[in-house]
Every structure is written in C-alpha cells, then in structure tokens.
Length: 240
Image (cartoon, rainbow, N blue to C red; front, top):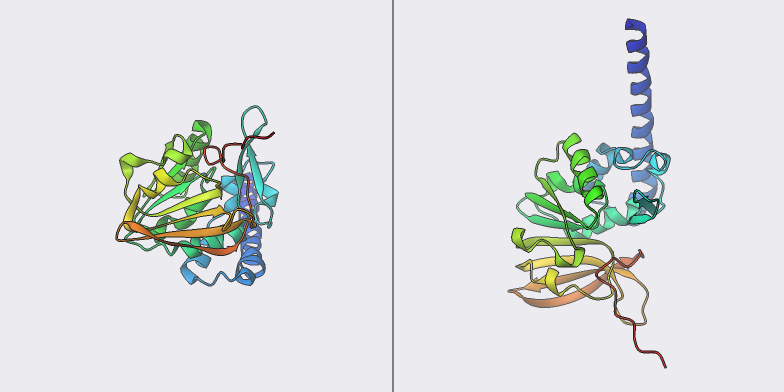
C-alpha cells in the first residue's frame, strides 16, 4: 500500500510538472506574442490549471490556441470557450481593479472567473445552462474562488438583482440585445463583447464605456470571432 501511494504521488507530481510546462509555453508563445503584458494576469495564467475546467476528452487541448466546445448531456454544443490568447487579451482590456465588481457572462465552467477572482472584489458568473452553472460552482470551489457567485439564467438579462457592476464581460458574439446589460453598469462602467464595429465589418472585441451614466463611446480593440450567443441574435429581416 505504501509503495502504491508513493507511486501515485510521483505520478501526480510528474503530471503537475508537465501541465505547468504547458502553461509556461502557452504564456510565452500565445499570450505574450498577442500583446498580453499585464504581469498579475500572466501569473494567473501560469498558476490556474485549465484542464480541471474541461471534460476529460478536451483536457489534452487545454493549452492549445483552439476554441473548444462544451457539450450538453445530449451531446449538443452548449458553450464555445474562447481560446486562451483571446480570453487573456479580453481580461487585460477590461482593466479589472481589486475594488471592482464584475459580471462574467457565458464562461461555461468559468475558467475565466478562476483566473480573475484575485484581481476583483467580487465576480458574478452567469450561464443560461443550469448544468453548466452547477459544474462551474464545483470547479470554482475547488480552486478557492470564494468571491465568485455563479448564477443560472438568460444571458441577455444579466443579473439585475446583483447590479451595479463596474465591468461586464460577454464571452461570445453579440448582434443586439445589450441594453439591459448597460443598465446594470455603474455610471463609469465598461462592457466588453465580441461585436461588429460597423454592420459590414468583421468581428472584433469591442469595449463600450460609460461616463457619468451616459454612453462614452465604443472602441474596437482587436479582431476575434465566436458564435453569436443566445439572446443576442438580430431578428431575421424580411426576405422577398
């Protein structure tokens, strides 16, 4: 029994060293080359094991630069997860401060919240899939993210009972439907989502700012794409 325990401990140590090396490679070859320079954020990417937020079949791809898709219990796509380099730039551009409250939308099992929770005062994580939300709670509890609260409900509705938020992050593409989220920002808050800067333009991560409670402009930060999230689709136009 003692020998078996020692062997298991050695195996776990080797596995931990291997995944730490993969995180280091991800940071150096993906994040830093994509202009992610925020040192506290980079340290989080070096520390948090992404594979524990993924189902077993996706764990080998945890540190790839691919968009991964979580499936529901029937095997249908449930949530597309942003590649680490896109997520890192998104979090960096959000400029989260330790005194701020964050609403994180459509993060699946919320690896994003595990990365960001020491950087914020509080994070509310919103998913529209109750099963995903329950899974996220268990994973976040495992990593000690005690200032993250996971809610289940319609994405475009936000969490008005917990508002206002200094930062709202939408981890997917939106065509319309941001009005209710803007209402949940603080007077000088900011919202980031993947959107089109112009109707005929390509997709980009956009930052929408408020100042004194009024709109203060929108900026395209960098190119990115993702599936359009449920509740944020534009109504189909009439076709002759």
